[in-house]
Image (cartoon, rainbow, N blue to C red; front, side):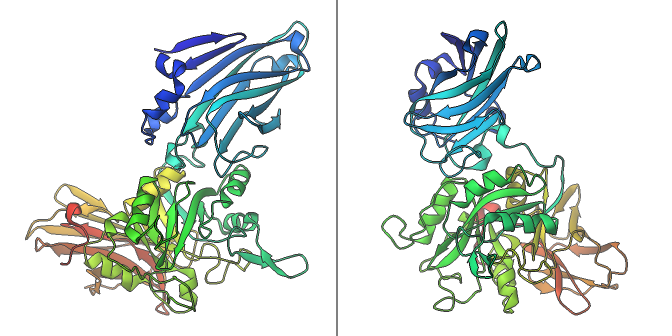
Length: 519
């Protein structure tokens, strides 16, 4: 039941009476866990009040309490009387300073540790008394305007824990969505030529603009150990409303680089320090923050040529703590380095890691037809909608493939059937000894190439032609199970032998509680 406490001119609505009377205690008992999506849509506070004609050209403060442990404050603002030319401006005050002033051009504000709505300041979120600041540039003498403010508190930086008002998908409905999961801007070592031709740190805008021109649906900007890119992304997202901007970071250590996706929370990268003694500690810290982790360019050289670029942990790593591996890196491709053998080896050990791709772009304005340009390669993900939680969920379960040429229309799909079971790329399927498994390998827009089929990393020849002769073609395969653990993956190559499409495996007879063990 909703409880209301009445202040002069303002109504405060809380989820419970206890949370209204003791907001700090309620927050402390929450455990700061990521709320379910259903709960994320309900505001933590509802502030209601009336602006009178006598308050024309004044400023009103509507107080509310921010609990300890809050990392983001989000609010929406609506009011009546616009048809009578009432105009109300919106701002936000924390206990010490003005955090937002938007005038009358915004009805949604969010302030986080590292990003904020344009016209707002990111930074620490102090507990205590905050105020919604309402300016009244115009209200007629005999008019009353009723306003409603919905206030949401987030206790962590994971995008999935943000309120629903910040999670509206850019595109609704299930589809294959195309994106790039690895790129750099001025916030680390991304560069581009200035007006006078000097190489300078390249603004985030150019990276997002290149992704839009490439026709990508999503990108993750993953500057080295930085969180400063998130504020620019918050500003750019409303303009680039066809390109989902996923918060990311390349955790750069001396023993390997790891992409950390889906949260704005800071993670300590100082591997070997007292705070982060080993890679497992780092990965456990990342897991607690709700981020998706992926090994970047694991086969790259390390040392003076590229400090920490290869995967060289000093001690054994619990691979269960990782979600994915960059099987194709645009930067490595330029130097003829393949990360696919590393991925194959981990799959053979029983490590169910999703294979993804990333351009590792450092030059946002380079021509889009070059290797390593934004979108080369492209990771294509089957997701329920175009939102950060949905894209990352698709990657977690392996419903994805890599389009190395970064096209806008090539598809690679694998479906497996055994009895009444149906599995797709990334899925698990059980097949007892002697049971038949039927696979369908489907490709589109790959005419002129040919398909390859791999069982446990070894190519298995087709009994019929493997040539792709039409723009939409399906290749059936049959296999009889021996009751043992196996993985099957499809690829497509061009007439020149270059890899076009790299699929994720279908896993047969895998015990997910016993991953990453030797066969």
